[in-house]
Image (cartoon, rainbow, N blue to C red; front, side, top):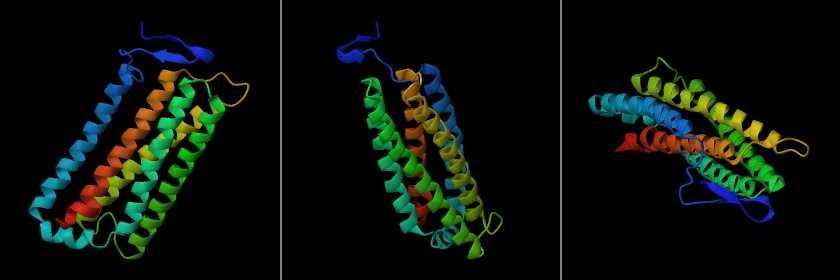
Length: 199
C-alpha cells in the first residue's frame, strides 16, 4: 500500500512512495535527453572553435544570468514547500507558495526578454555566429519550457482555490518535478554558456 490517511486527512507516505506518476518520469527523462543532445552538440562545436566561442560568450550579461539562476533556485524551493502543504491539505498555504513560484517564473521570463533585447541591440542574432545560434536556440527552447511550467503552476494554483476540487498529490508532484527539471536545465545552461565558455 502506498500510503494511508493520517491526522487531519493528510497522506502518510510509505517508504515505497514514488513521487508523481511513473509516466511523468519517463517524459522528463526523454525531455532531458533532447537537451543532452543540444549540450553535446554545443560542446563539440566549442571544442573546434574555442577562441570564437570564448569571444562571443564575453558579450553575455553574466550578472543577469546569475540573478536568474538564484530566481529559479528560489522558485524550486517554494515548489517543494507547495507540495508539502498540498500533501498535508493546507491548500491556502500551498497557493501562497505557488504564488511565489509564479512570481519567480515571471521574473525569470522578464529578465530573459531584457537579455534578448540587449543582445539584439548589440548586433547579436541567431545568424551572427555559431555560438549565438546555440545561445538563442537553447535558451529559447528552455524559455518555452518555462512557459509550459508556468501554465501548469497556474492550473495547480487555481485548482486549490476555495470551492474547487484540488488535484491529487501525485499530480502536484508531477508539476513540481517538471519545474525542478526546468531549474536543473537552466543550471546546466548557465554553467555551459555563461561560465564554461571561458574555460
